Length: 480
Length: 157
View (cartoon, rainbow over the protein chains, first blue to last red):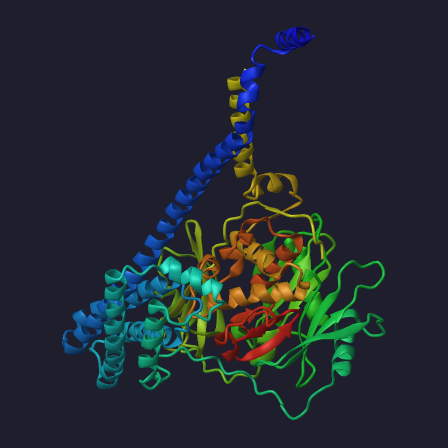
């Protein structure tokens, strides 16, 4: 019986599998083996990921290092160039020096833009750079228009800027040395700042920038006169004493946009408390409409500032010139009697038209109004009259001492002139000037040139070549 | 046979890891092909609509226009870069760029908001900053002068 069993077992073994004995022996190793293999695979994969990440981080780091050291270098160059302007007595050197400062300021601003410093307030440093840029540009245009060099007050402003640049230069160079010496990493600053939600303390780089800001703060803010600084155009004074209620605003907006007797229900959604105090209103879509309409009304005197209807525009059945007629009719119906179209833009299936009011034959560019027309059915889908509200008033205009005939002799023959008219513009320095507006083209490019109608100088050239159009994809969801 | 089986298992393990590696990053290319429902024809509008999509998804249309307007206002401001790209890609300026949400396709609503903002409609009235008071703990941002509150965002100068 014993023998039979053994025989049976052996038979069984032979029947099942010749290797069964061996398998039994290794079965205990199967699971650990697999886990081991998995571990090896994960390690290889993980190292690969780590390596790739490190490579990317190094690339970002080198960009940051470049921007930082370039910033230090550019500020040093600005400082040196300002000093050079202060010691030079040649007009040619002045022009070159001012142009160099202007260019280096631009580069330094780009360097700051390339650094992960969104969490570090740098307003004083940025102010120094924009002041330097503005002063150098103003002096450049002044010196090139006159025969003399820099005058005393101008030299004084430059020396004020130079004093500030010395602080900046010294701090930045010190920081640059620390970054090099202690191998500080900008990507680590960035990551740490994101993790700390902007409340980074005890970080050498961030502290260094903060210290620099504080030292810059010890100097009084440079108050550039009208000759240097771009001043904000003066806005019309709004009667602050009277204030309308939100209910009155809703009533005004409803009558203005939808017409008298309309039943759209409006609600106050926000209040603007900036330079133009305003009620932000939303009129819910009525039956048959899919989108609400937004209208803003000034708190002071209940003027409609802008309105928006974000409806979906499908297809184009109305052309741009018919759209312009609709826009003009809309403005006339809303009390804008004498306006001229100055810009037409097609934005996908919408026409965006800019109009300016006229005073006599003069176009008042600062007081512009925009109207948007859907090109599927010609419906008005937007009105933007904030500049008109802020700036429109009766101007006292000087007579144009430069005649159109004189102007024509002055225009460069390369320009294919399309149109000449009188206009009031707000120039680079924020001052309103009476100009001759000349529109024309040169090969692919279209321009508007503004000639001062009193002095004859070219105030400004603006490129108005339409941007190239391409096609991009949009997600269908969230059609609100 | 033991060898074969081991090889098979290693193969499976590796395949799983390779696949998971390939699947883990969001596959935006496939999504883009599937969801094309409209087009935009201007670079600036498109970039703006992408950042609005990433930053203000879930906000009202008005809130989206306001976020777009802040970027447009920065482009016009002397202390910020003077192009839409420059402002959007300033390191650390927008979380949607830092965390990659920017790289998805924009929503139709964001495109409309971007078109309005670029044409000059500005519910923020000139704001240069916005933040979400519920999630932003940065003390510095509260030193800004608040000029409007729209939806979850506060807008300031």
